[in-house]
Length: 424
Image (cartoon, rainbow, N blue to C red):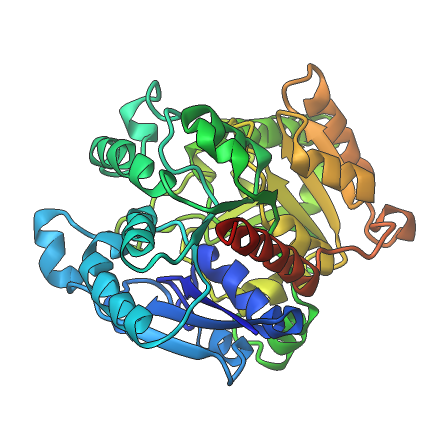
């Protein structure tokens, strides 16, 4: 059995989106002849919401190594909050110890804490262990360069310069790439032509039906939906990159309010966990737009993050689900497969024809509206007017989701290709 060392700073009980691929894959690596060990940052050094139930989904036989990090209470005084930068030295020392004492065939970075990825090149040079990078988001990107300051992430200028310097170091000797969007790989190949000759695969996040069963058994977060209304739920962050989708939605709601007031009064849309920031720094990104269109009475926005299993229970309790696209053509929301497992109608709002749109349309998971086309706001308003969740014809026609086991196999297939190439 081959052995892979996984670098995933965020790990249960921390509830972070970028560790979900690792978490849902852990039960299945052995099925494909891979033994895994994971190196994580101790939760006490991470200032994020914890969801203890997540730890119950991690198999007992998985070896987990923890590293410390510089305390954020100290580093934030100099403006340093990144877990990657606070734990870089600790990761280097810990994995050095592991590589000296054990035989690993591969190192797998599955995280959006990108600065850590430069350690792959260091470990390759020092221990001759190939490494694979999972690109869940773009690393160095010009996307925000022409955006107004208020639409840029915090400390954008620092991050932009740092990423521009660090990305080439990590990509110089990477042996394999996984990405949630083909465009992420294509962009990297343009910047680093050698990457076209290494194994690469587009693999979305998987979903595990056992998560829904676990969520039902430990229901702790409940929103009292008005059962007389059609409750549509969106879970997850909403940023400026989704503002066009929000404007489109609110335009449709405004039309519904004028032309179909009875239907309008029976709809409520819930946005849950829209900000990654803590309660003191979180900013509403949906309600201000809803207020511009005078539709705020049918929109609820809760910026605070909730537990992963709490969000699954909300999906199960909703009448319909909402997915928002961004103005970034490469954006491919990983939540589609989890939404599909909830077996509810999905309303998608996108600008472009992309992988997410293709998946929803091919699998008939719901209805997609493309806001780049004229007149589609009224189409959405009419659709909401006629939407009746008691009508079985409006439910998804297929029970579909990408199983975590299937997608773990795809990861392992890529690992094997990397090993074969490294032995040539």
